[in-house]
Length: 156
Image (cartoon, rainbow, N blue to C red; front, side, top):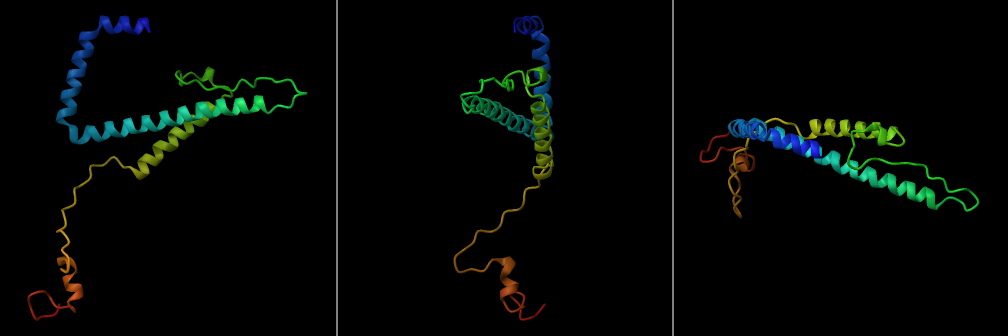
């Protein structure tokens, strides 16, 4: 952590200029960049929640295995663990397939977000006129007026 702080203190001017340029870029292209940023933050939140749930589930399963072992057997710690902070380090996952399972779930979350939450700019639909009690909306007036156009005696 000390090396990161030393690096930030040494190059704080460059980082602040880069952040300023990034803020201006995002401000002027916010129609396209803000949905992408929101989408990315949403994916990070989903993956973080899954990672924390997986971590505590593995701890619970490890505790359950240790406490349900028969008394005549030696209680051997299986060593199951997932890192809570250093999630990128594969060496800290035991068994290793937990890392790959987490990566597969993250890819499935990405696929679900692409399928159900597309990143395209949505068009705003025009507002409908408010519904008044006892009045038929304009869009349904022809259907319920016997096929006559409103205001004329002619049929369609």
